Image 1 (cartoon, one colour):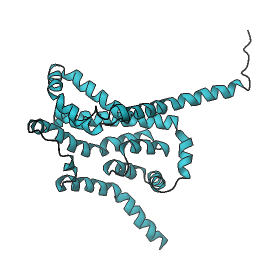
Image 2 (cartoon, helix red, strand yellow):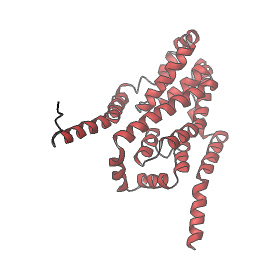
Image 3 (cartoon, rainbow, N blue to C red):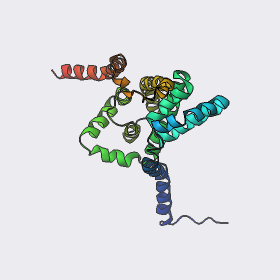
Image 4 (cartoon, rainbow, N blue to C red):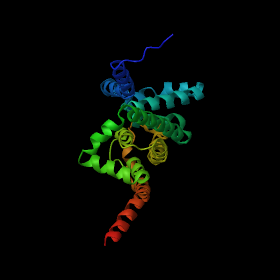
Length: 252
């Protein structure tokens, strides 16, 4: 029995199918993100949490392990598909599970979702968009060059400071060839301080609901919160400063 070799026309077709398969995850994310932006913006909201708080607490009390798993799973979906409501989800984690272990659930869900969209972007877009960014200008080019030259510091800064939206901070590293381990570690540690702040706000939502008020998300700008975050950002930027100074001395 002989096997007929693939013809010259079959090989390009096979490669094209493989190419489309690589684009499928990121295409699905884009489609769901667009749909969610229109359909879920009024669902994943503070008002929804307020109106359903008693039912959520009752369900948590009777199904705690399941409630924790479902919450983390939903958080993963929100982040992975760039759906609206990530801030409300973080508040909900604190409201349902307290500051601890609520912050653990929030960071776990956000990090897992970020890794999924990172992997999808790296597999689907890969070198093609990376080459496109090579010719880009402005902020994207500066961020790209900074990540390539000072990977760990720049990745931490992307997480600690709101330079770009969260979903862009998940995509940009994939487009410039960042490896999974640095992305995972810097995401996990970089989002933890902010997650802790908003989770603690969520843990106090019971009193806020009872008073008929809305949570003060501006707490992130209070000196006792903002200054430690800026301190962490300064530590992350320190290698960049040292490199710039020593580089200038070397040129002198």
